[in-house]
Image (cartoon, rainbow, N blue to C red; front, side, top):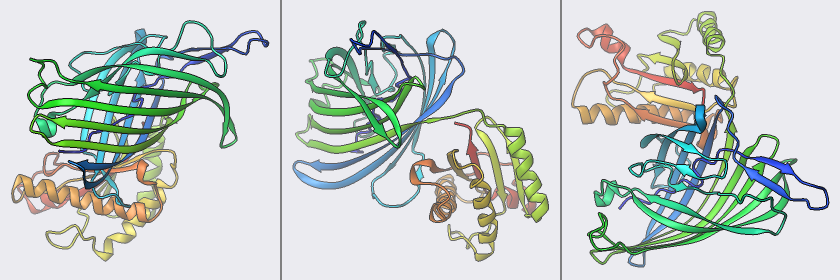
Length: 400
């Protein structure tokens, strides 16, 4: 079974802290909602996996949650999930993407479709009506949502109610700034009732979670989180899975990217340096550089020496925009099998991403790749010239 993905506090959308009288030193926490605001939550989850008490290995999961605040307290969130079973220094691949829109109340309550697999932790945190001071604690209900479509072929989310304990610990300093620290703890116990969709596959799920959340008061939203957890699943066939892990993440501002200016600057650089077979365009994701006819060894993902100069130029461009995440997309011409084209497009995108990672252009949690096979041609595949153009890699400077 694939590792269980945990995206911790996946859509925590900010709050306002209002100070009461100085003698009370209480803080009233509420979620804020500034229509049109965008930001992203970037988290990395590292877990050890055992099966029936035997160590299976480790997994590392990168999750990017792209947040857009809409009217009437509606939130649109796009989840991009990358999972690596061999933990190391390789660039992350985009394995899965989800989109969800839901409403969030000032208290933290979320109104989400029961058919949605995300957010995976809902109604957390949830705040009391009255202000709290350092050392104060409170309890509130929440919900954990599990996705067993892969591994157990369950086509509905498994939704497990939880009771969450919160403690406000006061202010802390991090990187020269003050944040408000909240400790979040809860246990989970779920034995499927007879007739439940998951009852034929799962006998028991138990878990324990301890989280620490840092809030940025001036920005009105969270800044960082970290967590430790232990998750146990007993399957109907008698197998026992255990996941022990840690996770951490941060919230990253996503101010508007002046796409036209960025595109014009890159286009001028292409002209000035006479970079061959290179295009630039703005699109819904950001600004995309297209490297057409990028050269690899035949039927492989090994970059030819002649391409390194072009990629070093790409690296210099990306260094101009250090606060933007980057997505590498590989494409092929229409040749061979669909499976082979997909694999080759992924391998070639990974090779370019690894080059950029090795150059120090981005950290692992701000660089991802994906392959599209021959699904998105820019020219006909009926001519050698068209196939040459379709063998390309695209580098997108992401707006969010």
